[in-house]
Structures are given as C-alpha cells and as structure tokens.
Picture (tube, rainbow, N blue to C red):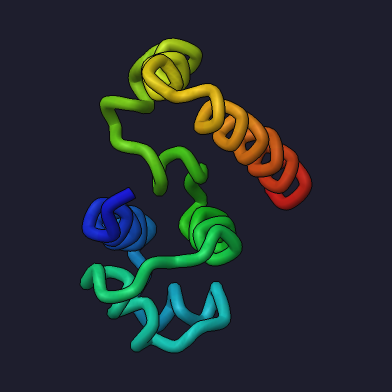
Length: 109
C-alpha cells in the first residue's frame, strides 16, 4: 500500500473525529511528531499502530487500509482478483499471510 493513501485516510478520519494531531497522539500513545509524519507520508505505521489508530478514530481497519472502491466491491470478488494471476508459491504465501492476519485482527479488534 502506498503510504500517501493511508496518510490521507488517517488525516481524513482524524479531522472527522475533530481531533488535533496532539489529541490523536495522546490516544495512541505516540508523539505528535509521529502523527505529523504519518499524515505527511514520511512514516508508515505498523499493523499494531493501524489497529490503535482505527480504535482511536472510531473507524474500521478496512476504512484506513482500503480505498473506497475496494470497500464497495464484493469482498470475495476483490480477493479473487488479487489472487487470480499468482504463481502457486505466491498463492501459498498470500493465503498463509491472510489467515494469520485474519486471526491477528480477530484477536485484537
């Protein structure tokens, strides 16, 4: 994912929540500078940080990570499109990572 896309979404949802960068930083226990760098696209958040941000901004991980066009698609259609041209090795790696991420998300969200 391009860092500018997630940075724009973080800024968008922070503004919708009527939070300053400092207030958001306090909610996720980081510095205001870190939030400023995230929103500028100079830093890319870890998965743990994206989870914290989604909770602090009262939004879903999907809204922070996925474009509105992907969110509007049939879920299985979008996943199938991504996997359709994978090599067998790529498919196995992606499948195993998706399963792990799904478990991680369910355990922490």
